[in-house]
Length: 491
Ligand code: HEM
Image (cartoon, rainbow, N blue to C red; front, side, top):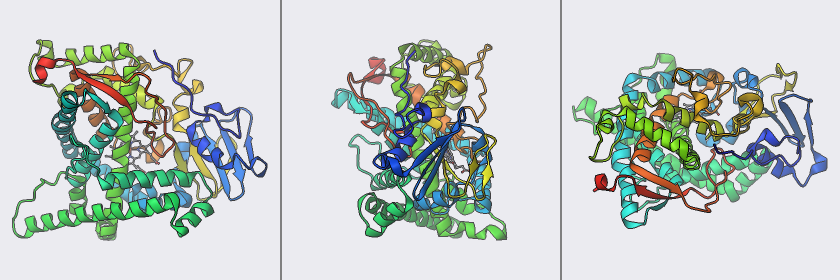
């Protein structure tokens, strides 16, 4: 089984090798000012604190604080201002109301069926179509990261707005909204790396990443506001004139517009609320699933024995395949996907080693003493390095750096439950991910169809390394050669 390197170490605290990539964001800023800052760690404690003028940073690999500290706090909402007052960026009562609403909509059976149906369609008509085209016209060489980002962008737009923007097409069009989201998130990552006064100055001067963010922000607002007014008009027409809407209203925007809040919640249906909510949902679903799929396909290609086991399971699960299928491309349905234990385990294992959200940013409203003894002050930025925690021996054992889907399977062949404070990829505590099931449906639909129908090989010598950002992308993309497994079936 493959072994994976631990993330880059922290320059100012070389003993903290396991404290992962986000620490380098902080340290790179201060590497020239070694005298002006201090770094402290109680021996044996999973927490360290970094202090410098205008910045106090705490990083902890103890899972306890994650469930104790759920507020994002004022520094988070300033850094992520482009998200407005949406669920990621809110605390207290506003967050509680939004979480309740989002939970009831995302976890409904109706929405679950919508996710399963649209994922299958997008894989069949979008993903597979593009790969077949590349095999026929481009020798099968492609950047899989780009393909998955496009797939998850289109899929998330379908779920959120009920509209497919068609970024996954054979001519790989540039979609300004997708590019604007990328720029905005990269600017936000830079903001984590510098004192607030610095990036505020850049913002005021409108230069560098702050300029890109401002430009991206405009494009994001235009795209979203246009979709909100189109959907509102269509729904209004369908109500007043009996004109049928082009979409049956299974998307989240329609559900939010039709949501019947009590009087005290009426404000939630305002244009600003819909803008902030949809931009947050786009961020939640888009990059995460795309990044998870990219790392999964890379790690599977490095571990051919895992790929063989996944293929065996796929063939054993589908009655069509058991009968020696020779027909058209096979895309798995929801019932078949629910039986794929080994594939599910392999995805969890990949998410453990490569969590798409590599670190969490939290804070407290009032001074709080952690069970580990450290006091957290309101001005302290708390970083929880999920990336490092997924590969720590104290949490996952001696084989923590091995890619071993078997660790997720019980002796009886069922999926083994790992508590969320141990498997942190979807966060733990009151702010855990609301889209975990959605993500697994999408990832399993893609992984099963692609692994069964195509042979995907990473190009020899292609450098794979993580890019420091809010989302764990690959720095150089993932260049692969794709071939059909059953050429006769592809005709
Ligand atoms: C592999 C895919 C995904 C991963 C690894 C993931 C991971 C996470 C993580 C780590 C958080 C906590 C973030 C924070 O508090 O800063 C989170 C929150 C959230 N996720 Fe996901 N996510 C994924 C996909 C999705 C999808 C597809 C959706 C929606 C359709 C979604 C909806 C949300 C929402 C609404 C929250 C905010 C919860 C709150 O603050 O109360 N996620 N997710």
